[in-house]
Image (cartoon, rainbow, N blue to C red):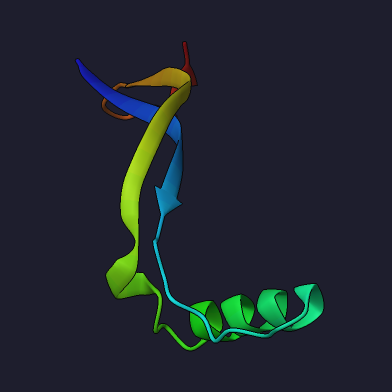
Length: 69
């Protein structure tokens, strides 16, 4: 018997970054979004917390379609 197990987790990452002084709230948000979208923040991201969401399994039998369990 073969079983396909699917685990869903929510991963929270955290980065400690420096931003220019004197920016207003809107400019700070835009600076962070721009860094994230450009991939510049990915090297600073560390996994902070992992929360288990769900687990499921499907039994796979030869010559038949997968069944949910």
